[in-house]
Length: 314
Image (cartoon, rainbow, N blue to C red; front, side, top):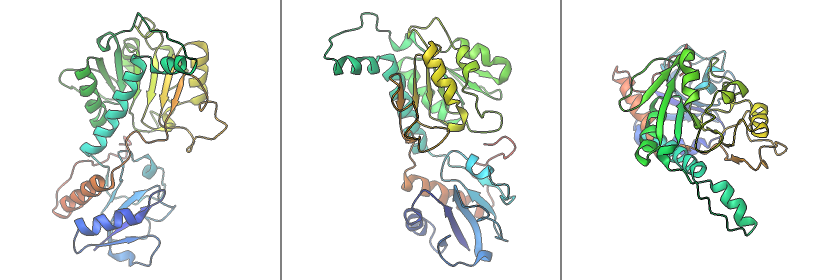
């Protein structure tokens, strides 16, 4: 039995070394070397080359080394086997760090203060709101969204979630579906997007959504934080909303095209923070441990955490 590493934009050596240690007796092969395609029972795929997962007659499951699986579901030739995504406390913790950092940054007006610093201006804000004055709404209230919600609430933020389907989460108001989206937006000062990218969510961060955000918040104008997927956002609409005052600021970790083109006006916009898709960088040790555990569970006839519903896209 062997595990195939079908990945690009990551070094396969990093994963190969760790998985060989965690899965003794299992051969770990890469696309860049000769291997017996009949021996491959499992594949770990990240932006894999086209058709690289076909012709594996004994393939039993595919694993994504990230929380998202849109890169897999785009493959029209993807084998019809179970798909698993990473469900890992390290990944959730890193994403929550990013969300908390940027909510606090906008709460405390740090972008404004840095501008004052560059101009050597001493201009304290006498109307500084507290965390409990600010309503954060998290689009996508799964594992990552709920972890961030708990940490934001601990600081004092007024947090609610929105999910495409109804769910109950203790201590939080959770809105669901298109019918409740407008109510969710109307109570939101900072909207945080942690949604998966699916046919239903593509382009959801657009001028219509921005126009529905709260107009009576203590921050003055609403703020967008997108640490989900670049395909969720319409960047022309973000720029327009910033220009006409519909949005006050944005923190963007993901983009329609990555790397973000040098000519993009987002780079130099005074109300935009650009980060290079590093909100929750996968730690190789933690992710390899998670996938090895998932493989062992499948081998034992169990269904490990992270099973993807391809129809839903996550």
